[in-house]
Length: 187
Image (cartoon, rainbow, N blue to C red; front, side, top):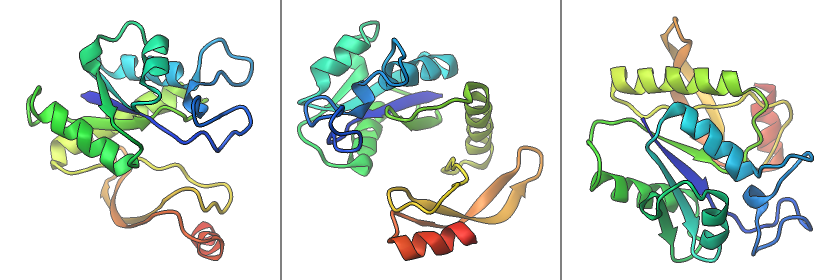
């Protein structure tokens, strides 16, 4: 597995702690000594030694400072903020020139706070196996505990495999308005 860490952001979600020059993924939260980015890197290292980090040009020096053990070729630099899809496309383009085309690629966000590390590893192992076996894109979702407009919603389809509880995706809806998010949450 190859892991791509998406380390971008505009610095608005945890303002005033987070700023455009120093967004959320670079912060240390909950009194921790390591940043969200560094914890994401630690999780990625447990999955693979093939790790790439995509970050925007104005943040790349901070990102490199926090991930000193990665070589320069592990960093993919966006010239400006273009959004998650563009980060992933840039990473796929770079990886396609340097790796086997049949290797599973996982993308994870640098600003997520994950409490259940063991659950995270298990989920990614299951996703790796499903992607390899089915030769398909696999989405990993978290069950919402409230309606939210800042996230996408995955509607599960039919069960694909009972053993690891892998489902087909019926649909994906990106960042709905609040009334739609309430409807998705209730369903």
